[in-house]
Structure formats: C-alpha cells, structure tokens
Length: 406
Image (cartoon, rainbow, N blue to C red; front, side, top):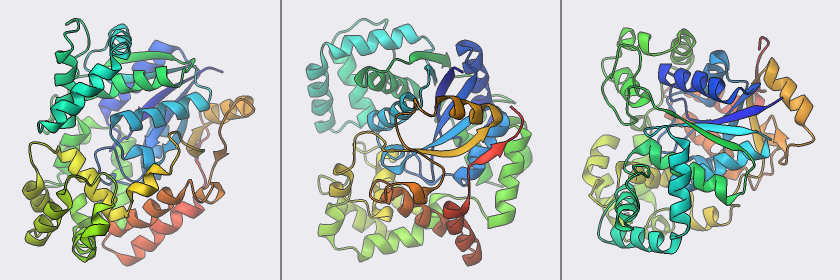
C-alpha cells in the first residue's frame, strides 16, 4: 500500500481542507492518506479551537486514513523547524509522497527555488540576519533577502504564507534526503490570513474562528464546513462549555508574567533583545490578551512570533529545555485511523523507523515532557472545573479513534 502525507492543523477542518485532501488523493493516487496534525497548541502560537481528538475525528470522517501528532516542540515553532518535524514524521512512517497547499501551485518552481538558494545559502542567511537587524519581521526579512540575491523572477513569491511553509517543506525534504515525492496544489479561494469569507463555500480557518467568537451565529459558517465538522464543534461546546481562544488563558498568562522574576522570563524560549521588559509592562497595563498584544506589537515582531513567546511563557519552556531536544521527533503518536490506515500499519510496521505509540504514557518521558505539560495546560482554558478534569484525563485514557469503513 502506498501512502501520501499532508501537514495540517485543522483549526477547524473546513471545505478548503477538504479540497486539498481530495486534490491530494487525485494527484498522488495513493492508497492511504496520512495527516501530521499539530496537537493542543499551534504554529501561530495559539491554542487549538477544540481538542486534538475532535480535530482528528473531523479528519477521519473527511477521508484521512491516519492522523498522527506533531509534537509541541515542532508544532509551535517557526516555519523551518515546523516543516522539518512534520516531513521527518511522514518519512519515518514510510510515505511515498507528500502534498501541500500553496499560492504558487507548481512543485517544479518550489524545487528550483530551494535548489537555487542552496547554492547561496550563506549569502541568503546573512541577508536574512541583516534585514532582521534592521527591524523587519522574519517573513519580511525572508522575502527581502530572497530578492536581494537577484535570482530569477520565475521563482516562488516568498512573501506569501503558504509559499513560505511550502518552501520550508522542500528544504526539509532535501535536508533529510527523503525518498518521498513532493507535490503541491493551489490554495483555493481564501488566503491564509483572510478574516472575511471569500466565497459562499470556501473560507480561511481564520475567518471561521473570527465568526465563531464574534456573534456566535453558527449559520454563517454552516456552508463553509462539512456537516461532521459542525457537529464536532457543537458536541465540544456541549461537553466542555466553550471553545478555546487566547482570551480564556489571559488570567493565567498575566499571573505567570507578573509573578516570574525578570531573569527567569529572559530564559524563556524565543524571548530575546530585552523584550521581556516590554512584555511585563504591557501585561501590567492590560485587561485582556488582545489588549496586551496590541500594546506589545511592533514592526519588528510579528503577531505570530509574539504569540509564540507568550505561549512559551505560559508553558514555562526555557531556551535550555528546547535546545536539549532532538531536531527530529523521537516517536510517532497515533491519534486516529480508518480501516485502510490500520491495514497500512499492519503491512508496514517493520518498515516504520520510529516507535509508534497509541498513548502518551508509552513515550519516553523526557522526549514527551512538553506534550505532557501541554495536555495539562490546554484544559485550563475551560471555565468549568469538572470539564477541565475530564479533558485532562482524556490525554491518558483515550485510545486512537477508529473508523470502521475505509
């Protein structure tokens, strides 16, 4: 059986994701589709809208055959680390190909761009560093550095968010010397950061989340998501009382910031250049997470980078702790599988190059430390204490979800 991989967050699963999944199956002709999915906290430094089991269930009902978890130490990182963790997992699971969505939509252009930059990697890295020192955000520095090399205009546009991620997927693919075949499909209708609905049936996850936390009118998003995704959202709210957003964690985060000595804040991962002092001052003056972020935001630091800093503060992740971790995942955490996915694992279990675990308790406690911590912190965003306790227990008691039909 041939497997193809996709890298996802599904926050939440919507029609654009369904389009990507269907196009991936059509393009790769694979027997099985594997999704590497972020767990409780995401690449943009924010809590997932609802738990990983619900999001894995959305994927399973939409036609994904295997859902595995991207660990916290990769899922909440900048693009290059995020990409290397995800591509490494797909390669370790024996996938024959992978496919990502992009604004460009041409895999040859991605490969040409990566190959061109590989020959001038030192110049490229130096240019990124120079533009970052001038106060540009990382994505802006990345794009400016690329243009400064005077390469052909036929290469990908590295100012686009999905192109940036795709570029890093190709870089990671080259770096680990994977035998997988790379594919990309054009992102349909909605841009990654769109806050408004781009069409009656396709919208970004950002715009859907904005609608959910706006007036709460679920009818506005019904046409944008598969029925199973809508049902999962309702079931989660009925069970736990609310969906997750940063505002739910603000009292905890504010307390953590204001009660932590400045020297200790300085040791938190991604905190640098004295920004810890600004964080303390902004937290002291703010009554909500959004107010704090708007006070904190500067031209130099993107909203995403600041959110990741604050997430690492909330999680108490130190520079030393993150540096001590491997640059590739140490195990494969299985979250969900269809009958076809189960058969793939049976046929290929001897070829899988990492330990395959179905419960967090089976993982090496050192390697799994941040994921164990995340499983305890994430439920703290729920208001009801009983709901928190139920959510915490799920991490240790829930076996992989299974769908009997292929």
